[in-house]
Image 1 (spheres, rainbow, N blue to C red):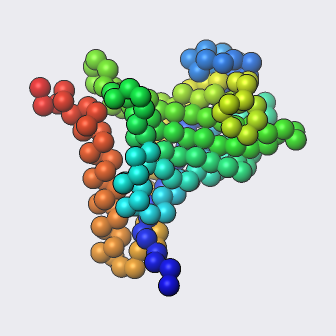
Image 2 (spheres, rainbow, N blue to C red):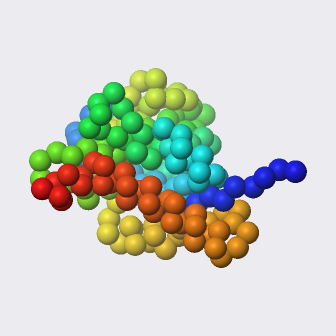
Length: 203
């Protein structure tokens, strides 16, 4: 008998200035805004086992969705995806939220790799850290390929409200299980934020 574990799913939309022929996200943002070329991702994050997700150091999930970028196409289906929430790095003060999507365009493989850099810099930057996705477009099936485009995507207040409204619990047998799963996810998320930013709140 296979034991089912409860998990979480939610949808997220991020968009921002993006340009081809650029390697640095900040440059891609400015050029994309100037040329009016924005890139948007519409993704579903799936965490199949909330306990495993919390206990694994990289806090992995699954990512799927579509990409909108006029120079390449609209509603491009992503055939592979990676998600990590508060993934540790070699810098103890830096954790990453990782969003990666593989897709094909005109018969070629591309890999969109984005990261949110969660760190406690001077000033209150929690909002910008958790809503700003530094993004590069690689040629090939992973982020080892040449960078052929870059930009910065963001999550607005309206999009955040929509995100919260899409949260669902999967494989839960009862209302109690659903509440427990949401509580575990919420405690983990807020706990990670406190670990990064809470010291200034308590000073």
